[in-house]
Each structure stands twice: as structure tokens, then as C-alpha cells.
Image (cartoon, rainbow, N blue to C red; front, side, top):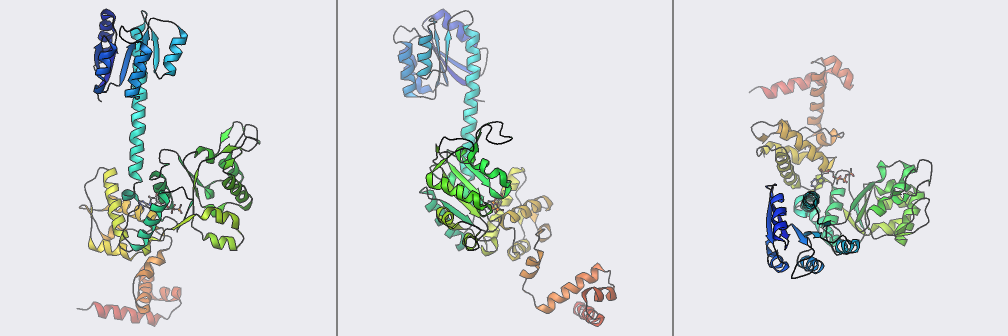
Length: 451
Ligand SMILES: Nc1ncnc2c1ncn2[C@@H]1O[C@H](COP(=O)(O)OP(=O)(O)OP(=O)(O)O)[C@@H](O)[C@H]1O
């Protein structure tokens, strides 16, 4: 941990030395003592974290020095120490930006000790928040999130670039697991709103009766069980972005309420009367074709035009060609880094297997396949055998290989033959084929295998 830089500005040498001696008991404090305001101002380039300032200095008044310090650097925490017990002076100093106001007496050194500890905790929390914000921005920077070079994904990049430059509503469509939420976050964290909240609401995950209150909040007593006032997601997202995922799942009565909020840009909490102005960017997502939903009468046409904004269609992974391998490398790097493992490679046959598979669960499925492969592989190499596809649509994978119908038929027969421990009669009955078909197949396979 870096030493905390503290300036003590105190014209009474005896009092100044006593305080300095007391604070030096903490070896983490780097303390400099000055007797005038001028010396303190001249040394501000040393960037102190905290300045403990005597109010009654000979060359400049405490409140003026406080003002000058904060003009130079308003992140410095200033603690005023004064002989005056005048409340008005104290209040004015705190209003002007001092972090604390202590009266000089026998307890001053202990009060100062505690005040510095509190300020240090706050500074450390502020640093952590800044670091986390930076990490979040890096996490959702383009290079780190939307990985790919295929034409299909390049088109998405172009649209995201446009979305970032304005506040336009964005509607993201794509199959499950294609990264709709990842794209929504990338837009938010690269836009001017990045320091404000990103609030995601998944329509499919909220019970129908609760959606309205989730969206708009409620006042205490608005309905049975509303024991406290609750702020809705729209208010939570003030200044930032609200991401409405699976918007097609919203029922028609709520669609009209949502439309009103979007048109008027204000919400009223359930049970309340005050209209609350909103400054929130809207991003929506759906895996359904919203136009079709309008035609079927499941989605209001007027809401459709309100939310469609800039449409971004995310391609399924199977249409992204070699992006599968780029994403694989990215997920391997991520997994090995997170688990402090050595670098892991990918054999040629494993690459071929990945390129052949259709990934019905898209990027989400690829990530889970690769995470497992990183755990299962030997000798820092992921081989074909380490790639397990657990997709519910296994036929997709089976059919993605280019084989003749005869070859597919043979594979199916051999599969069931093995399952039935080579019992030809049982297999013939199960597949509803003649036993001679199976014998012919066995013979041809045996002939093929004779060198
Ligand atoms: N471009 C990407 N880079 C890294 N990870 C990604 C990317 N796209 C998707 N993922 C991974 O896939 C998972 C699913 O992504 P996301 O939740 O954004 O998909 P979705 O399209 O919103 O899915 P659903 O429709 O099921 O909500 C994420 O948790 C993330 O691990």
C-alpha cells in the first residue's frame, strides 16, 4: 500500500510537532509540517492526500487557504483545525468543501487520528470504484467483447459504432446466446452514458403481475405487500441505459403502458401522482421476429415503431465462419487467465470439429464447451476428444457432416448394433428393417477393414 501523504499546516510549533509526532505512530503516513499557508501552497505539487489546516494562520485566513487549495486540486481532503467553537465558521468551512472541522483542545490528536482513518477508508473506496469502472470499460471495449472478422459481424460493428455516437434506441435481434446483452453493454460502456447505470430487465424472467412495479416502481401501500416505496428500473437507469431483454414477452396491457412512458419520457410510480422526468436510453432485444409478432397481433404496431430504432441483427455462430476459432482462442485465454493456468493450444482436428458443428446455443454454448475442454485436456492441448457437445439439437451436429444417405444409414445401424451388443435380430426389429440389411452391412464393413 502506498503511504498516505499528509500536510500539517500549523503556526504553533509546539502544537504542530506534537500532532506530527502522534500521527507518525502510523508508519503508513508520510507527514510534512508547514508553519505558513504560503509554504503549503508552494508544496501542493507534491500531491498530498490530506491537509490538516489550522484556521488561524498568520499569513492567510483558513477559509481563504481552503478555497485556494481546492481550486488547485479538489480531490485533496482538507481537515480544518480551529480554536473557534463558532458553529457558523464550521458550517461555512464544510460547505466550502472541507471534509471535517475539529476544535483545538486536549482531544484534538485523537479526533484527528479518527478523522484521517475515515477519510482514508473513503479514499480507498473511491479508488476501488475508479478501478472497477476502468475494468468494466475495458471488459466491454470493442476489442475485448465483440470478437470476430467475418463479414456478418463486421456489419454489426458498423451499426454499433453508429449507435455509440447518438442516443438512438437500438433493437437487437438474434438467436439465443448470440451475445445480445454483450452488445447492449458494449454500446452503453462505450457511449457518453458510460458513467451512469446500465440496468437490464428480462421480461421472460419477471412474473407477469410484477412487471409494472419492476418497471415503474410503487409507493408505500400501493397494493397488498407494498410495504415500502420502491424505485422502478426506469428510475434506476436515470442518466444511463435501460436494456429490455425479450421484449416480445411483454403482455399487451403492459405494452401500452410502456409506450406511454416512452412517448412522454416520464414515469409515475404505482399508487403515486408525481410524474418523474426520465433521461434514459433504450436498448431492446428479442430472439423473435418482432414484425411477425405484430402481424400475429402479439405486439402493438405503435410500440414496434417506437422501439425499433436502429436494428442490429446478430448472426448465429454457424454463419460466422472462422470467428469460431477466434472466439475459441479468446475463451481459452480468458479461462487460463482466470484460473491461473499455463497457455493451452488447440489441435488441427479439434479446430476442424469446432468448424463443423452448428452451435445451436451460439457463443454461449461455445464458451461452455471451451471451458470444459480447458479442464479436460492433457499436455496443454485441446484435442477432438476434449470437445463435448451437449446441445439439445445433436442431430444438427450429426447432419452437419457431408455424408451420403448410405453412410448415414450405416452409422445409425452400427450405433444401435453396438447398443444391442451385436444382437442382429433385436436391432433389425428396433429399426424395422430386414436382418439381411444388417448382415450385408457387417460384411461390407468387414471387407473394408481387410488390408
Ligand atoms: N462476443 C462475445 N464475447 C464474449 N462472450 C460472449 C460474446 N457473445 C456472447 N458471449 C457469451 O455468451 C453468453 C451469452 O451472451 P448474451 O447473454 O449476451 O446472449 P443473448 O443473445 O443475450 O442470449 P439470450 O437470448 O439467451 O438472452 C455470455 O454470458 C457470454 O459468456
